[in-house]
Length: 411
Image (cartoon, rainbow, N blue to C red; front, side, top):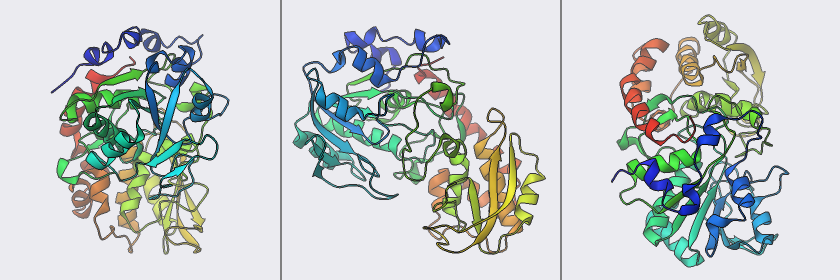
């Protein structure tokens, strides 16, 4: 069943009035308001009379960096009953591939349930056991298909439908803009937790827009869904234009600069080269033992727009090459508007394979899970250049862009 944005937004009278005209206008004289800020200003009208559980992490904060769980817990207008933690946990104590488990939050006494790697009926059973009526989602995304929080959103929407719960998404900016979708589109046979459904590698959407897309295109039975949109956000804006504080959504996403390159350079997770984990510049530093200045020189010769590459040496404190000094490149973006992170990521893969004799894909072909098919890996192995690799996904990308535009809330 395919639902239009109008059908979803008019499901609740309070949200029918939440039109996107103000957000679309992007009134420069008006400060951006997040979904939570608008919800709080309304006196939590959309949650009235409901027992509430919230899916969130350390990014669910107010402008004064208070966590929204702490704020809502103190407010008698909200009947907050439970918190659901994703990868890295609700309070953010776990590294990549970890979570916090089931516990009672010391600050509020609220039960915290672990959603990481849970989906379908097991996750629906958690929602049922929590005793909530409505599940709220508020997590800062970074705009890449393989960043797992958007699939936590998808899994929680599906589980909420199975459990007979209502679902509310509080919107936040896409930190790398919402200008366009880009990159290869996932093939369903490569679906994992780093990509459940066929969307492009950089989706160019907010979490509320993604929720509408998931509900309208991918969920077998749509969940009762409401979105609380932002006002004052323009699709062309990077995160610093929002004047919002940045909290790392995960331990290796320390700054918006990291998010800017991530949709391209995270592809190095699928190789034997370091993607910079264990350094102060993850995903901006790339390298391996035996890499020298030839790589930076080769990729600089391509004249990629908006970016320069510096020969760099570094010693990761954990992850690949822990404690070893390795060579590679540092990415320096000098023009964000011109920079294309995915094309840049492909160029870096092509030139790394050309200049580094030790280059290898991970033995589990993780690169295929990240890119969503075998196309990128097989093209590079066949000697394709950057333009030829990028050309291989354009038809599928065009088709996804046509679907995506029906779910955009901000014009």
